[in-house]
Length: 246
Image (cartoon, rainbow, N blue to C red; front, side):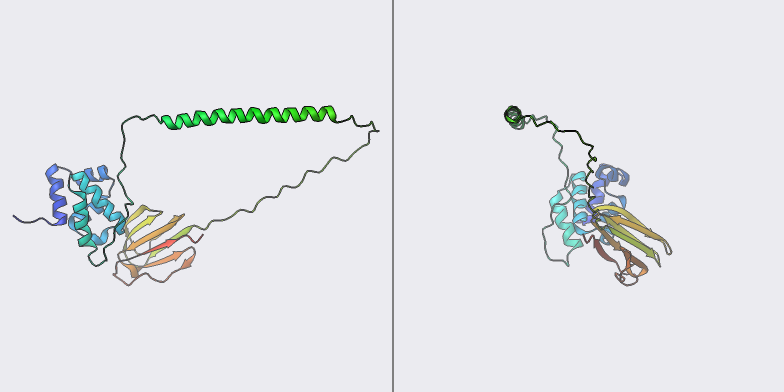
């Protein structure tokens, strides 16, 4: 019996369950482009390693496969030239607990805190009112003097604190030749398609802008208003990341 490869194993498991690519995309929230790249083992089209590993784990669980074994097989194929490194679990499945739990300890702590706050408030109020009463009794009445016209006191000028400007990441990409792009802004995939020659695309982020280009020499990149050196040669697949300086 022929041993199935990584991509064939995913595709045959999906077809055996009768799942379409559109269904998998909706169920796992993974773009159809990346699902096809995993099944066809065209790993160059995938985003950075940590995101791609999360896609494999999520897709394998959806198909009922052993996600740990599929991740190990994927990394040995896609990143065989890289040293072994344990990937941090950035992309995790959210676990939903259908049970209803009442945090009794938190409620009890809140009640105790409220009782203490009320008691302390009464104590402070009693002290303040008692001090005011004693002061009123001990302070002699001021002597009467002839009223004189006084100029109204000028209100102090309030100083307006200077506004602190936080530098963002602004990246402009202009294509001199057709170039496939994958752009991730602040850890969110926002652009995955071919930028045609003559077209421009602007991306803004608070933290970072990651770019993966299929024709690195065919695009010009401007980072926060400054033109940067080409990230690669014509026809090369290259990636880079721009981060905020502040």
